[in-house]
Length: 231
Image 1 (tube, rainbow, N blue to C red):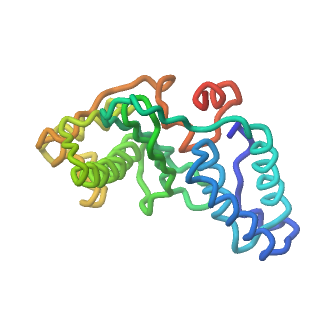
Image 2 (cartoon, one colour):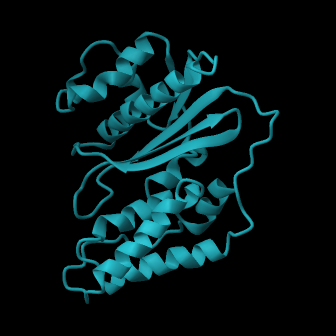
Image 3 (tube, rainbow, N blue to C red):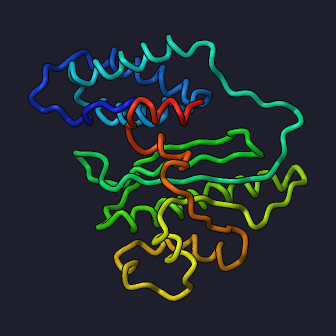
């Protein structure tokens, strides 16, 4: 959703009813399976259910107001759509004020139709935006590989799957089979992307930030930018 000051634990804020707040969050979590534009903000608000304050409640109410304004919007899947699988991924380095973890976001398309989306707080701390994008690349690659396996059961075989990233440095590291000095601090599980690139299952492409469709799944954006990505 549109840009606002980042939420934090608000330790000095006035407490609210925890049960009621969790109920609201639960209702919103149910909606993210069909409304991708609210995924990031709901996942962010969900981090503060243990000690919710009026500040957190204000943001949750803001989501409900947004939903009232988009009741005539939705996803459309015509039957003549192509089945080319593509993916976009992005990462926000230390975007969470309290945990300073990576927030990764990814979306997958069949043709030009959005079929999968995610916004997740990764459980690692990195020292640069390049490392953040590299870790997010592997997370998105894992999701694409799962989809590849699922579609295989329906007779669709995918190789050379396009994955778009706005970090040239992360792409360079992923395409280099040699262990890079800048990746020594990263957990070995995040090097999964290298194997898939080497086996020609994944093809990495650079996309400029203004055309990065996964941008809205990692952080709050200016209003005009958010509307552009939604529509």
